[in-house]
Length: 385
Image (cartoon, rainbow, N blue to C red; front, side, top):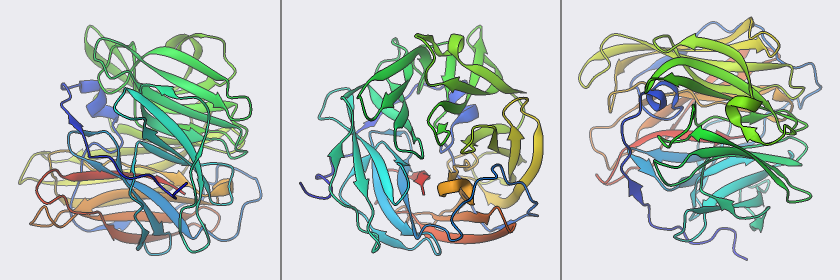
């Protein structure tokens, strides 16, 4: 089997406007210009022994404007962001699986509303290995993907490819192939009483999942939320089986993404706020803050990083904050802003903070996303480390 199957043609679909999604979408928008890391404070979320060096490579999926059935998968050097490999695949999601450069990748399965999960390995030279099917075919299109550090559990949100049907959160037992589902979730504007974001994270054992989302009332978003779910919870709706850890007003800073600690006792929360008019040709200041918090209460225990960027946004929203952690959570990688070229054939220049949690040192790396030749705009990335 070849390292990656031939990429399918990018297929766009038109999404109805959704206030809930606008609030919590991790990769929805983009901010331009120069940014520098803010003050870094000690805020480790785990006392586990972790590798002393960061992994050599990270994987990213390029997100495009509108909605895309998959994005270009890339392998980059963690130290510089330099592109190493761009295999011919349109991936829906990617997550580290069990450490040692193992990853799980989600792809569309043919022309049906179905997805398939695959396991792959990244070599010491940054080359992806063969794909191996993982678990049964997924009903729907995977929109978020996470895997446990022990490699035994994979979780994902799935979009039903219909506005009238509701999406769901699922947890796959890699060994047995058994899948648990919790439904009534609004995924990418579908029906559902909880609006799910594009972030999802698991504890090292795979027993606990965490995600950001929103609650809605009378057709409007009322609150932003961070929720946890036991992956052994019995069947039911996600609202019934999950637990609210943190609540914020709909008008406050965006609860963009979350990362769960290996022991499941704490988490990182990345919030994004803007000052100024967020529209074309208007200068805004965007502040991205990563804090460490307790699972038990949602209380903040420290600030890992404060990152600011000032510039003109395009296409009219702030660039979201995606996060990825290295095995053991010694390092956190967070792309947080992008600068756009005058021509759409030249992709935006992304800036990412690479943070050593133990030493409080942070470095900013830059890498350019591929251009679109005027067809669409690359608006963000999803990453796995």
